Image 1: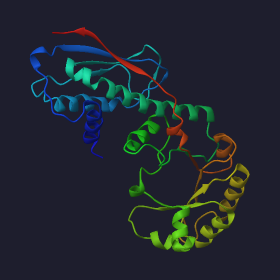
Image 2: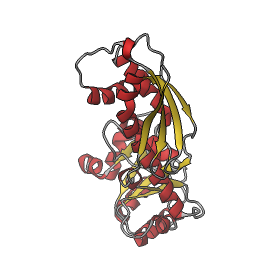
Image 3: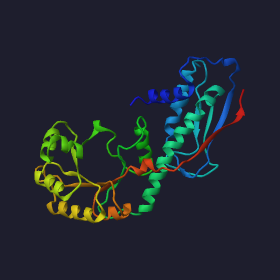
Image 4: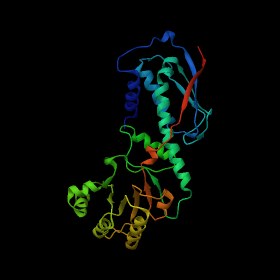
Length: 294
């Protein structure tokens, strides 16, 4: 991803696309403070420097000193209302025109990190064999790279970012191919260093995958906890995929009933849920100019 291009796109949404220039003679040097207004987990600060740099370029302030950030908190830190997060020093027009985009971005990524940390805290210690809670591809177009970063800062794990970095055979793929074996045929051996995962929604589909023996990563979709236990027992009896000898990895998704802890206790390896991103609570930050330096 070209992060600078993405940042410029955000800034131009706010600036508009008409060219303009700021006269340096009247542009004073300022110092501002970024503070938390909510409790949460800080995430996304590592990208704020790029926002200030790109604002300077878009304003054609070639002779201006670059804005300087000094962070008082680091990524993943818990923050409370009033906490000083960072001090920013730079020309007034750079600070003023970056402020809202920077705070919107910081809030959004921190919201996801905070929500992910809350979900994991409520789950408590993982049951034996459980490997983690992961996100999904349900997110905001153009922002998923940063959403997934927020999940990691909050202690969660990432599923694939897009179709390009993982092969998942879903229900529609099976319908188009005509059968589970045909859907596996269409993907098998096509990409080096990329393994296939397949989605199943019933014991019948699960048995087809097991009997085929090639795919060892199985997504158990839209199953209640009782059905999940039965699916896990079915798979663990086999031990490993007969065609490859690899041990099965089971992911539960589209949870029906029961909390995440109860689902983890069914014996699955992972739980994937879009709620890490989609249920994030609002957080707020502010940036105030506290002194004029000249």
